[in-house]
Length: 264
Image (cartoon, rainbow, N blue to C red; front, side, top):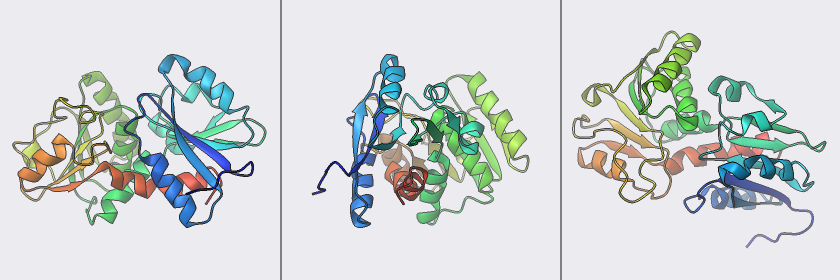
């Protein structure tokens, strides 16, 4: 068990709800394995309390930084002092460094983590046809990351079509070699199907996309970490698809998060 003292650097993961969060445990393991004196805990912050929570965190001198998860990844940006290039491009932040002078610097490592998790699972992104559900905070990061990694074709489906179109246009502008569009897409024509929404986190949630036409051998990937096997992944596996759970993304993010807050 980690020994926490007055010298220990403290980190939090802000979300609402927080019962599903496992990133704190994995980060604690990551720090312990490397003999880094740091400890992480989830912090349950309702949307209306986010400004006060951020103001409090910038005043706590032993807090090294904090992760940001659903639903705060976009709302946190105007509360920060600076945002890195990926965070600006994506329009969402998921990790923040607390500087000694009380200023806060955020960036987005969701896309890096997701792409890294796929690569670690021996999934080839370059040249792939990708169907993505969701255009929110994680969805924006992953869409840019798929295009950056060389996906040939990217279709973004979202319950708000305007939001999907805006994201598709932004990705097309940044990475014109990736054919990017908004729409429901054709599951039968995709190589990688990705859920970037929170659907699957709660019992009874609808599937983020139809799975009955996914081709055998396609890859189904997920951002939801709890449960480890979501209904989407289970349905895709029943079709003969390879599956990559949300935990893979988080494992690939650990080093990036440590680097950002200066605890590598």
